[in-house]
Length: 334
Image 1 (spheres, rainbow, N blue to C red):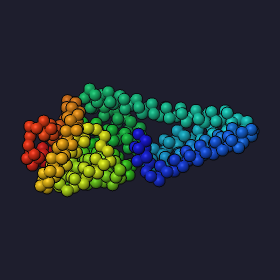
Image 2: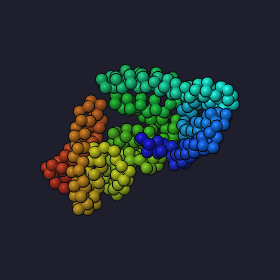
Image 3: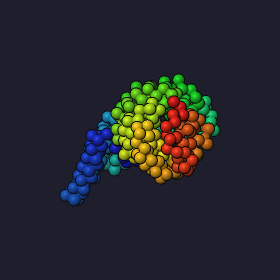
Image 4: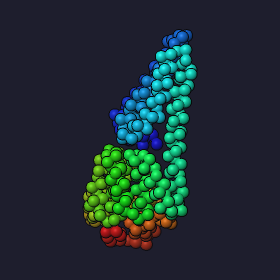
């Protein structure tokens, strides 16, 4: 989770956050040691907290789209004002300080719980395959907060599961307009077009996602799939190795990544390298069980159509029921 936060912030903002935390901690400790008996110590410590939260708010705000900035300042702005009053009016430092911190906590809980309830209700419908009801809930949330990328991204996922690809594409395109530096919209469009068999269009969006998150594995993994379907073996090797080096998170994804590498090497006539990847696939046998669980879900119909052939081939290669020559067969979905 910490790595995800650092990637989201970017190197420069992450360094600023670390500097703020270290600086606030050091300054607070210095005040406590050097001015332990000073009458203004409590106000001084509150001032350090005010600078810390103010700085964090500015840094986080610079990373968010405009609607997110408004919500962040709504949640933290009044609390910062109350903390500032506590610094300026020492006799009321405990009152204003407590009120300021209390506002920040309460505002976060209220905003988070409201949105969380909407998502939880939509997910309940999703689990029952009630896509129309789930979309209707997200429609209400999108109408209330039309410029929140996450609402549109989640609704796009619901449209994909319901088979409404046109509406999914519209929502993903809106996500990109709202937050063009985030990967979510590009990744979604890459996956949609890949599922439709339009691998050239999928490749463009997957490359855009990789450009924005070069240290992550998902965009490179998607490119490995796309280039495999396009028959671009050198590109498969490049992107799958990138994804593996970044740390693919689940065995089922590592299993298919190794399969695509094996197929790329076989297509290039590197049979020893292909066999080595099949050996690596044996270490990801748990991924076969993961895919079986995934494919049992009604919501996985699109994934089954695109990946079931690869999973079956991986199983045959691991069990020894298929020879190396099976890698020369065109993958399903091309």
